[in-house]
Length: 181
Ligand SMILES: Cc1cc2nc3c(=O)[nH]c(=O)nc-3n(C[C@H](O)[C@H](O)[C@H](O)COP(=O)(O)OP(=O)(O)OC[C@H]3O[C@@H](n4cnc5c(N)ncnc54)[C@H](O)[C@@H]3O)c2cc1C
Figure 1 (cartoon, helix red, strand yellow):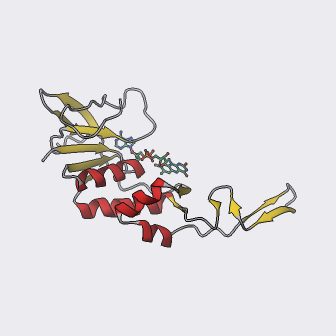
Figure 2: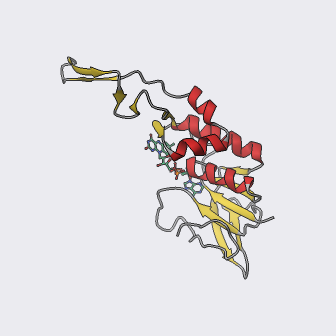
Figure 3: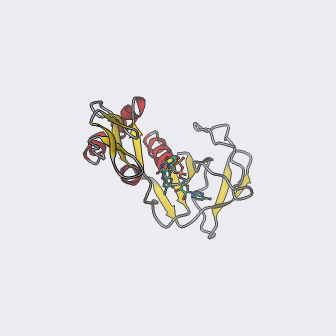
């Protein structure tokens, strides 16, 4: 079984980890926060993303925790209502659609649970410190010196990259996933 190290336990990392595990990879997620990070505003799930939630087994629960917006109103600076609608909101679009608006932390919580249930390993409060190239694989060590399972490849999923804080991610020739550079 190939080992994969995923850096970042947010929406992208958790989803990637779950699906890699489901497809036979041994997955370790390393997250620098002490737990899956809470917070964030509403996220809209539309179109193909609804199918992804369904296949990930969390569509019904996502519907249960949706924000249930009932409309919106625009006020002037003095608080006087200028207009009101119950058809749509700026954040969630049309309210009579199948789309789901839910809080980011609710989505992350559902994805985390699915990943745990699927057998993904998590290392919280930690991050990848080094990446050592080998003839056929890449090794890594956490910043605390705890060795993760020696990965065949690893994927970085955080959007923001601070110069110098990430080792460059490479793609293993035998890997089924692409690692961003
Ligand atoms: C707490 C939080 C709240 C957010 N709120 C909103 C919002 O309200 N609206 C919005 O549009 N977008 C928000 N975002 C951004 C949104 O989550 C992303 O744009 C989008 O979901 C893509 O997520 P991602 O998984 O690619 O990256 P992110 O959500 O950015 O998650 C990256 C994860 O990687 C972890 N990480 C970063 N560097 C390292 C490292 N060196 N080692 C280990 N782990 C690392 C971070 O702690 C984080 O958990 C938020 C992100 C976070 C983390």
